[in-house]
Length: 230
Image (cartoon, rainbow, N blue to C red; front, side, top):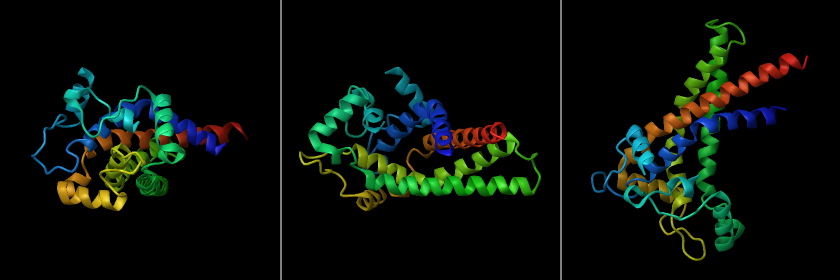
């Protein structure tokens, strides 16, 4: 039941935050491996990115009209077509390309998320800031967790996005990065420390609400379940 409630909570959060994921992906790919000031900035900030995209998941999220395109452009027509094409070209392994970059991102993000949420919620309960089982305590703890998650996860999120989106040769080998460590080093070397946090504003607007909604929905679903299962 906990597994089901976790899945429902994530679905509810994703429903609201997917547009922010698109913006985050575009901003993370902008100026890839280029020094600051040497490339055209199609997206100046998260709000400008929303407006620009309005005028005109990673392959699909990076795909854009030519005048605002960033990163390598794939021409997928939808999720199932993308899955089929990648599978036909690169086999089953191709569908897991970039997983080495995704794993540290998920490990660090999930650890920071759950630890800070639980710890903050326990402190709020001990200090009696909110009544026991109050939704306000869960919401506050989730907001704190969202900030920590974004700060800890953004560098790995940037390189993960780039590993997923990089062009490949006929064998499916990446043409820009050899792996997560190479991606981290190249990004830091050419774009500086701020390159590691590229799109952090969009990341917070995406990951912050997603973390808040996921943990809030999960906490409330658990309360409902245990209340009515007794």
